Every structure is written in C-alpha cells, then in structure tokens.
Length: 252
Length: 368
Ligand SMILES: Nc1ncnc2c1ncn2[C@@H]1O[C@H](COP(=O)(O)OP(=O)(O)OP(=O)(O)O)[C@@H](O)[C@H]1O
Ligand SMILES: [Mg+2]
Image (cartoon, rainbow over the protein chains, first blue to last red):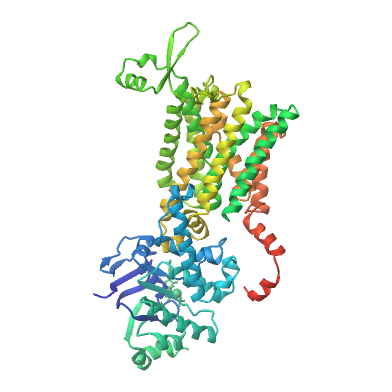
C-alpha cells in the first residue's frame, strides 16, 4: 500500500468543479510533483489532502487511514505537514518561535505543567529549541532566528516555513510552490534541499510551476488541468507528452 | 528570559511591600483599600490578557464570570440552611465540617456554607459555565465572538438583577469574612474581610494572589502552550496545520481566564462584604477589555500596570461621573490609533531594534 492514496477525489465550489475525479498515489520515499496551469486545482487538491477542505466525494487514504472527516490538526498528527502557497508565518513571533511551534506535535507539556514551570518541561523545552536551531542551520537561516518572522525577506520566510513543517517530523511533506519568488540560484539550492529532505526519509509531494526544478528532482509527475488529471508519469515522459505540451508547457 | 521573568516578579513583590510601608509612614493607609480592590480587578484583567492578547479571542462577558464567582460566594455564605437541616445532604455536609454556624439577632442558630466550600463551588461553577458557553461561542471569530460573549454577559446581568436569590437590584450584603488560616499556633487569624483592622493583611492577601497569578501566567506564556496560543493568534489555520488543536486550546484558555475572574469575584466580595449587580454589568466587561487593550494586548505587565492604575484612579473617584465614559473613550482611542495597545510588543520591539546595534540589521540584508 502506498503512503498516500487518493481515489476519485472531487471538489465543487458551487458550479466550479475545481478537482474532478482525481486519483493519484504517492509511494514512500519518492518526490512527486503536481503541475498544471493557474487555477488547475493544485492548491485545492492539497487542501483536500490536508483536511482544510472536505471533498464533495472520493477518498484520501494516508498510512492506511481514511482521512474523511479528520481536522487538519489530526492529519498533521498522523505525520503530514505542509507549507502554503501564500506564506503563512505566525506574525508577532520570531523565526525561531515559528519553527519551535512546529515541534508542538512532538512534545507534550500542558497548561498546568506550563503554569507551574515543572522541571520536566525544562528538558522538553531545551530539546525543542535545540532541534529547531538544528533545522534552521540545515536551512541556513539560523542567523535570523531571533528576528520577527514576517520582517524577513521572502526566501527566508519560505525557509522558515519549511523548517517549521519539517519540525513536525512528517512522513509526508506537502510543498505548495516552494520556488515561487526565488531567483535561479535560490531555486537550485531549494532543489538540493528537497533532495536532502528526501534522503532523511521524508516523502515529498510538491506543487510547482518552475519546470526545470520539477524535471530535475521529481520521480513522478501528475498534470492537472481544469481539475482533471490529464497525464502522469516520469519527467522524461511528461516532457514528451503532446497534450501536456499543448496545455501547459506550450503556453509558457 | 527566565531570570528576567523572576526579576520582574521579585520587583513587583518589592514594590508591593514598599507601597505598604510608604502608606504606613505617611499615614495614608486609606489607600490600601483601593489598592486591594484594584488588585482583585487586576486578576480579572490578567486572565483576560492571556485570552485576548495571546490566544487572540475577545470576551465582552468577563464581568459575567466575575459575577458568577462573587454572587455564588455571597449567596452561599449568607443564605440560611436551617430550613433544610433535616435533609440528608445538609446533615452530611454539616458532619463533614463544610458548613458553619451563625446566630441571628434573636439568638437562633443559623447554618451557612463554609466560605471555602462556597469558594470552590463558585469557581467551579464559573469554569463549568465557561466550558458550556465556550464550546459553541468560541467557534465564532472577531465581531461575532464579541457579540456572543456580550450576549452571555447580558444574560448573567439579567439573572442576578431578576432573581430574589441574588438580591435583585440590591445585591447581597453582610457577606461574612473568608477565613483562610486560623487556629495555627503562632499565626494570627488570616481572613479576607473589609474589617478596618485587617486592612494591611488584606492588602497582602490580594497582592499575593496577583503576584502568584502573574507568575503562573508568565510561565504559561513562556511554555509550549503559550507558543501554541500565540500561533493561534498569528494564524489559526496554520496552527491547525501544525497539529495544534486550536478549538481545545481556545476553550482551555477561556476557562482559565474565567477561573481568574471568578476567583477575583469571590475574594473581592468577601473583602467588600457584599456584591451588587453593577459588578455583572456590561460596562464592567467593556472596562476589562479596554484595560487589556491599553496595556498592550499581548503584554502581561502592561495589563497589570494599567489594571492597577486605572482601577485605582477609578476607585478614588478621579473620573467622577464620567467613570464609565472614560473607559469607553479609552477603548475608542485605542481602536483608532493603536489597535495593538500602547505598550504593544511591536512597539517595544521597534524600540529595542532602534537601540540595538544597527550593524546586525545591515548584515541581515533584509528586503521585505
Ligand atoms: N475556497 C474557494 N471557493 C471558491 N472557489 C475556489 C476556492 N478555492 C479555489 N477556488 C477556485 O478553484 C479553482 C482552483 O484553484 P486552486 O487554487 O486550487 O488552483 P491552483 O492550481 O492552485 O492555481 P495556482 O497555480 O494559481 O496556485 C480556481 O478557479 C479557484 O478560483
Ligand atoms: Mg495554488
């Protein structure tokens, strides 16, 4: 059984069929990309998978559990984490605090333990801080740790968001257009980073418009257009697919 | 961070002692009464500060929780239970020492709830009410949440105003002292009461509670839970995506702040020897919100400072007949000119940035 199995998923917004009978599977350990023109339904698909939207019909099975009816926080606890197309950092918190918040699911101190500052929370807090700083080092943003997160440059904000998502120690990481707003050098770095994350044993599903990045790093690509899945396959095959060239690559 | 927090709390303790000594030396002990009352009101404000400033949820009904605490403490310690003294439950309670005996002017024996029992019942009732109202109401956001909590406050206000059990428009008076410590050799009797001779003692009781409350909440904010609350404030959707059960955290914070309000209600009612419907009024709720706002929202120390200062001035009658209007005006001004409060984190950060070495800024190479 694959890590993530999506079966005949549909989402309608009124008359708009944003996701139309889409099925796809993501096997453990792979980097899978979803591409498609603007408005194809890629973000909607992510929102359906992560529990932010509930499907009109169809099913999402993650680690052999049907996700139907689960809230995003429950899906997150099952080992799925994500970044957002329009970066969503916690304003009013530093970059480090943002990343530390990602550690929530892997720690336990509750209200009483916090209020009475119980000794067992000290070690947990120190662990959270250490782990968060390590991740920020990995993403080369440790020097911004104590800056207000929303005051950072765009690329740095993306990195903070990614560190926060990684801090949940996910099985599956959903990245919605991680290269948006990055220059070519930064995009190449991002590609290396994503490959490194996969080597850590994390499966990746990403939405991306940057073709060279997608072709470079993905094991498999799914193409969406107007909510429909129109093609799926290895990067080389997708590049050759006439329909894909027509509706997607052709328009660039 | 930790040491800074402890220094702050120690500083507060020092200040509290110093003020008491000052009133002693200058013969101005009469200030202690208002300082004690301000302390209890500040307790409400501290709890509300965590709810509003950190978890980002407004409540325009916190006078309601204060009133649940105060009114239940008053009613249970003043309503005579002798008519029911034959019932099993009263006998059991009496046997367990949970009731106390008094005497009326004719020398007949009267039976009341022990203030400890009524205190626990009153605070539990407030917590339970917060749980039951919080589950549906906290699903709302922004204006809708404000209106729903306002509705809750109105209901409590009408209940205490309309029911004979709570004394209708007169409220409840002759509430007995709340004995905290007695019969311990070497220690005087320590009780919450408005008794003239207990003024200093009560000042310290109230401020001990404020200091303890401040420390607990500062700890909470510094903890994993505090981080979760602030992330809910920052972006609820994202907090959810990070595995934070936002509904549960909001509810727990709502209950926590209700407990702070109710505890303040219980103690202030014993201190004042009574409680009236104005304590449950909407204007009281508005006042609490205004003070949290002017204190800087996400700022425990700001809320405490403003809570003590503004309540003290109000209780001294500085604002005269415009008392309520002053707090309404404060709220309008804050919303217009500094929605994050005048002691807000952002402004403090800006100040800190301005004073910290500017070189790091340049090296950071920020664009944004
Ligand atoms: N909450 C919503 N309510 C109504 N319509 C929506 C909603 N979310 C998305 N849509 C519509 O659904 C369609 C698919 O949107 P979606 O954001 O999934 O596209 P996308 O593939 O992510 O596009 P982009 O590449 O621009 O990010 C669009 O036509 C969009 O306007
Ligand atoms: Mg999108």
